[in-house]
Length: 98
Image 1 (cartoon, rainbow, N blue to C red):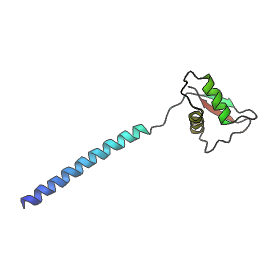
Image 2: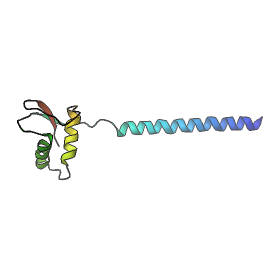
Image 3: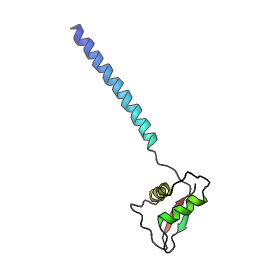
């Protein structure tokens, strides 16, 4: 009878420890995937503009020499909720300010 109580207590203790671990992991993951906040400016898309050439200009003007065109494109797509890289002349998009 005592062994059953001991094993029952151990199971409950292990469940509580696992719950605490999963709660902590969930909190950490939530913080890690929090949305990145951007300072933005509006930009009117001109003829022949692409996300690549717009991003290239942003990288050249930035003081951050580690800034990559691909990352800027990704940020522009995120900010503007774009599912692809299609942009159109006259469209107003938001650009990140680095």
